[in-house]
Image (cartoon, each protein chain N blue to C red):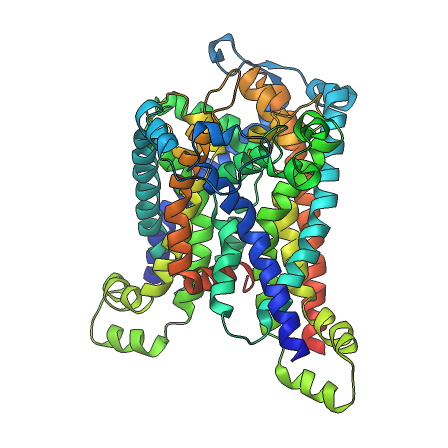
Length: 271
Length: 295
């Protein structure tokens, strides 16, 4: 009895810690401009939609959302297409440098962004890809490959070899085995890896900031970070935009919580 | 066997190209550029070789020294807090009770929120007039309200709070995976021997989650040393360089002032610091794993 009471108290504590700050910020977005300025702050708003209207109509939030969907979607798809065969090769072919390459990828994922930012910018500048979707997408593909390849390698290693050997004897090529057997069996793993890459690309700020200086192509994080406000910060608009930017992530997290935790564990702990 | 080797390389080739062009080439280029002087947006002016000059400047630059100091303080204060809070969360989540799935989903929320959003959120919480922070501390007494982000001592604490809030749940998930790998019969055996909960925690849990702790330490240290988003949104490095962490300083030098050579020297500095720490952790990690497998 005492134990379950303690557990309940701690659980509530964790819930408050994780939710309260964000909940307060989200509730801000439904305040009226007057309620926003109230001192002391009004905790429960009267659910106005003024700030959403302002964010969508005056600040072009829809364009940022569309840019984010395009960039994160394209980066996720291409990253998965590239990482699936790579991870299959690393999981199945016993090569001398397999382990070395996986360690290299791990090291790459730990590079401080600033340590590669200048040359990446110059490279994209020479290609004429600054301020384009493809400029930021290729950077995201490169930077998400380590995560995707690590997770997929872990999942592919769990596919029983016997099935593949049987298919090889039946005359399937390695490519056919990958697309007809391994990928369907590891669909949950691919989905998890794709989800983590999508979350990474949706949230990424640093490279988006340096590559995308034209508001027409900027993604949500850049838009939210650079919301202009010279004298007074437009807190209501920022809160509304933030809530819209976070909503898909919260839904994905609640729906696929198991997969995400398993993917993080595959990417982190088993390494 | 040769053909399977060729096939493997074919499968891996696209990843080689991307990683090579957008990670390996840039890191070598940053090293090279740190020995030159050139201007980012005016590449046609050329690159002038200056030897170790950028590094000599870096070592005598008071802003760089402050930047290094605040980056190390940021890491040294936030990481232990994340470990303690994360371990507490992991221990609760490891218990069997109703609503555990919901609890895990809730813990993932701070991790999933974009850093830019959580930074704006904390910036507003620490707002000097409408923020929750002042309301909780001083209630309606607006005359006592503080402006933490404009105060050189409070601003670093504010970004540490924002960092810990967002990343302690990630630490919790890594530690939870570590806790779940501990076999139940160890605890049962200890119970039969009459061990108290504290003794079980001290002599079973702590030693056996050592690899998970080191792994969390590794990831968190790397991330803390390259912190950027939080500072960009919450303080822009201010007030008076109080939160001017290395990544932000390097960003300002390279992209705001266009000083590629000096910015690259800062970048190389951050890279070498994280590399040294990573190798140290990995050594400790492998040692603790070997120890674990011997037990």
